[in-house]
Length: 194
Image 1: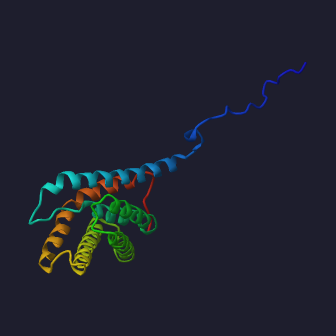
Image 2: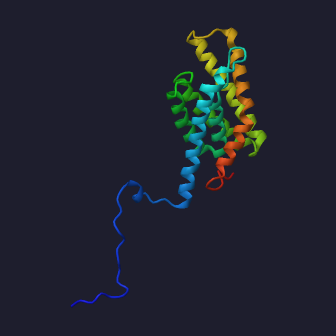
């Protein structure tokens, strides 16, 4: 007869299902949580913009919170991670049906890269620098959208004020969005070090 030893190796019980095989460290879980919360913020902003804020118009225009939040996330996360996020988020923004057109993907991503590079190279990481870069990105985004619409005969030059007013109205919500996004960026450690 063979006697079982007291300290003999016992293999783990076999697991079934996808989630049981997905092994993440705590740092990876927090990173997934952070990016999931960013996506949730954009979804909530899109719903808020399309369902509630679209009813409150000033001189025929309303806010565009999703591009504003995309710029803020990119500025907060840094160039590498933020710009990949801005590309993916601007694609989802286009598919939500509220983006001006397919060119908005290029505008949002290029402006995210540009203002983040400028902010990291020339300015310190601060509230005022982030608001300045977000304001510049929103104004350039709305002007670029206006000139594409003008080129495609979708608008007239008389409507340039409504496009700029839309940028200003969106920037009114930027400080609140900044607080939410910086709170989310602290999940999982420092967002970036310069």
